[in-house]
Image (cartoon, rainbow, N blue to C red; front, top):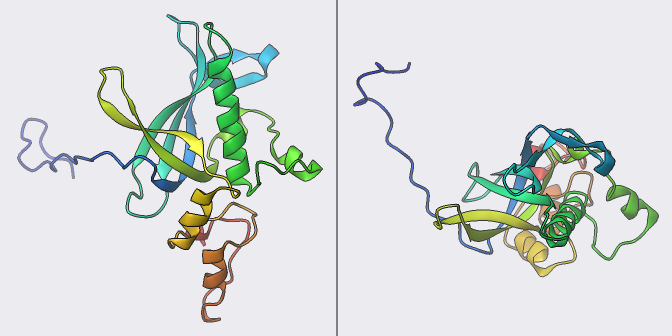
Length: 206
């Protein structure tokens, strides 16, 4: 029950979180905060994009929730660039990040150019990215006041040493619908009394 509005002695103490170390590999769920900006000519529909009225830049406002491990339930916020009036670099970086997210979420090597992989890298709209789960690398940037803050700007894909290290260090996440990883394969060898793994769901959700 919420305490009296004028007496805060029984309120819970604030939680103080240290920065997650740069380079930490974590499975995350990404959700998009709708900004209400659409540009059908670019394929930006559904109100997911946000436009900065001062600079004219357009981006996706993303929240990442860590799904497992020592930092489970922690949240990280980052922007995914779509358009900058200064040039194409920011938008290109955003496209590269989304490609990495799709590769990670769907268990694809970045070098896989098979028809199936190419189809898996296509989305019908930003709604397909809202709620997607993937393996991410934590970075440290600066907020508007110049203070350090955690960010996510890189998705870890199956063809990287970070992906292999995460699995070898006991991580249990795997891409939805993907082939079992080393850690999930060992889980499959567990006693038969445990429910069989559902390959369409990440291991933490079994």
